[in-house]
Every structure is written in structure tokens, then in C-alpha cells.
Image (tube, rainbow, N blue to C red; front, top):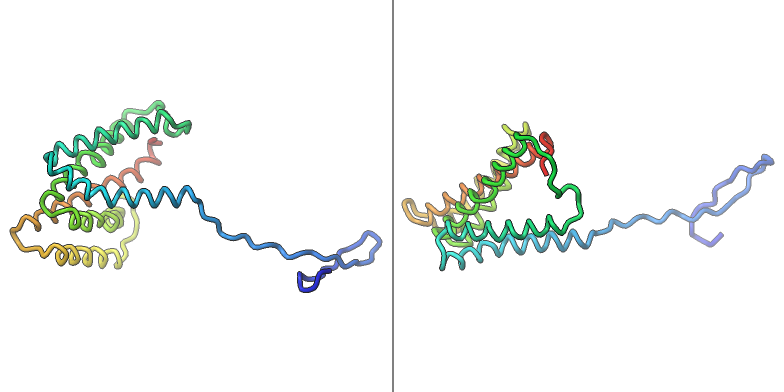
Length: 212
């Protein structure tokens, strides 16, 4: 056998004798990285972060409501093209019950116009950087909303994260009571709550009603 390349294990023979046969050691599988997933995650992060800056530029020419409407139209066209080009059966239209259609409508309103209008108003009042910071708190709010809706447990670190995020928003914006920035922080927090509600509802309803 090659030196230092593995143990010699006895192999039973039909005659009752035992022969020694070299068995090379098993190669350890290295954890692989999905290149497509990395690119998709990176692209999503860039688009999500740049959306606040793009919203600030759009609000120079449009009102918050108009900007939300145009963003919704562009999003509908983009999603429609993806559905038409996709071969996945999960994205194809299928027969849905009335309850499923109603829940899809609620999800579309909450995750679309309701969130976008709140987001645009917050950017117009508090600016892109503060709005991005406060609206990013939706991740903490999801954990809190999941307690009554999904029956998940509350962790103290979630409450701590929420308090720290609120304190950070106040320090970042130098919030003063009665100022427009304070109002913008409040609207951004509302936007975070709306988006967190959307994520919790879609998790609850998608499995129960087989939503696409």
C-alpha cells in the first residue's frame, strides 16, 4: 500500500482466510457555495439599499403617492415578465378559491401600496438614510408579530434589539419633539410595521391556502 495513505483493513475470504486490502481514506466533502445564490443575495442587498436613495431622487419630481404609483406599475410589469418567461409551474396561474384570492389581495395591498406610500412619506420627511435605518427594523418587528400570529416564542434579545434600534434612530436623526424628522421616523416605523405584517401573513397563509 502507499505509505501513510490509510489503514489496512482485513477482508474476509470465502476460504476462511483473511487478506489485507488497502482502502484509501474517504475524501471529505467541502461545503460548496451556490454562485447563483450569492449573486442573487448581493444584487438584492444593493437594490434594497439603493431604493431609498432612488426614492429621494424621485420625490424631487413626484409626490409620495405618485412615486408609489409609478413604482407599483414598474414592479407589476417586471413581475409579469418574469412569470411569462418562467417555466416553473409554481408561478403559473391556477385555480384558487375565493378565500385564497381575498388573501392574495390583502397581501398585495399591504406589501405594495401601503408599504410604498409610508416609505415615500418617510423619505420626504426624514431623508433616505434615516428612513433606511428605521424601516430596516422590520426584521425585529417580524419576530414580535410572529408571537400572536404564528405562535412563536418571544426572546428578550428581540426586545433589546428593538429598543437599541429606536435609540439609534433617535441619535442618527437628532430627533426633536414636534419636528418633521420625528414625524418621518414615526412614518418609517409604520412602514416597517406594515412590511413586517406582510411577511408574517404571507408565511401563515401561503401554506394553509396554497398561495402561489
